[in-house]
Length: 445
Ligand code: SDX
Image 1 (cartoon, protein in one colour):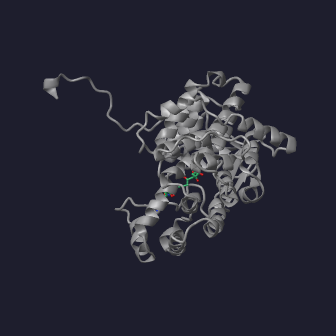
Image 2 (image 1 turned 90 degrees about the vertical axis):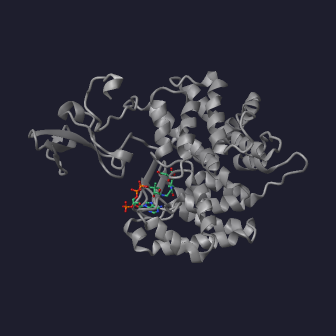
Image 3 (image 1 turned 180 degrees about the vertical axis):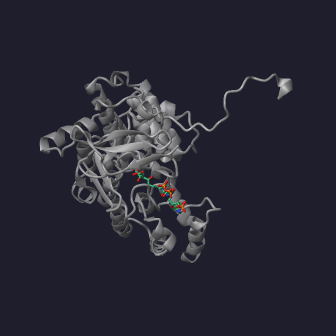
């Protein structure tokens, strides 16, 4: 049975264009309303498809499926454009700071001076975690991957903050959102310190968000820690670039978990788990491992060949994107930041890594396989080089991504709960298993 779908609207429902699905087998035709966004592809509202035509759509990986309506982030993959509440990412990266961007993503507008000061104060006053969380930490082996620790610590927050888990109370939702944004750097630094055997460092309220995180991560009690402004600026910019990205895998995970009414801390823990995958946020760690494995420019052709070989599941980490079929604008900003940071912070050993990355980018972008598939460097391709130069171990790269993306996750989670169209997410399937059969006695199997 096939559906011939005419793209041109055949008639209107009210003032809405429609798309008509015609089932050639039964001859049945049904009109479905088309919805327009502010910008970007229109959507066909197929919510009545199953009831009207006894059919599901089939879209593994949701390559052509809009899961929700959102006002937060817009991506134009062909243009390589990324807007947070309408503002281009490159302008925010250059002119704003992470907490101002967090306010923008959460509330929809940039704050005035008083609003910003209050928001920064509110976030800062939530940076400490319950002292018993440190003992929870000690249940992990010292060599536990910090993302595993973050899944545990963030999930455990729901055991500590019962006063902000009622998702139907807007005030509690905002308190939980502020707590998540404020405490992620503290827990991330705890995970890092625990892996080094160094003592945990408490947040210092007089410091900015990125500065506080760097001090909790790299300072030791036996000496003063001077914040390096280049590092703090680079850290803040990296957080801005990673803050939100429409309905990516981890954000969709947070929305799906939240659609069941789960508490916000559990939803963010689910998002962290999804982000960890090497096809998603884990790619920045994978890029560094790949560059170190390639080692020299002479070996690049060998790895390009492997990336093209369908019998080899190797993929070029940091390349390609479900949405961007042009440069990822975040990669463009990070590529420039790379040079700044390496000049200021990186030791000479990191230069070859950057040169290797740029040579790999050059070769790949001139290779027909990558050109045909519109595979460009993405946000993860350069971030790892900067983070390594800043002194982070590769195992912490995705944790830093999670700190930043928590802002997007809580903004999207709040939007989902406030959406009157929202209901529990429950996709269907195409069943191709065996038909009904009776249980056989063991001697008959
Ligand atoms: C992030 O969604 C987001 O917004 C994510 C993110 C965010 O901010 O939240 O932007 C962050 O996750 C960035 C992506 C990081 N991942 C990587 O760098 C891992 C390497 N990239 C690939 O695994 C891949 O490109 C994905 C997962 C990113 C996208 O995969 P798609 O959209 O499912 O594309 P696909 O697998 O269908 O690939 C299309 C073709 C295939 O070849 P053909 O079957 O058509 O011959 O391109 C090929 C793929 O084999 N391909 C690659 C490739 N990526 C795609 N070939 C070699 N190397 C690659 N990196």
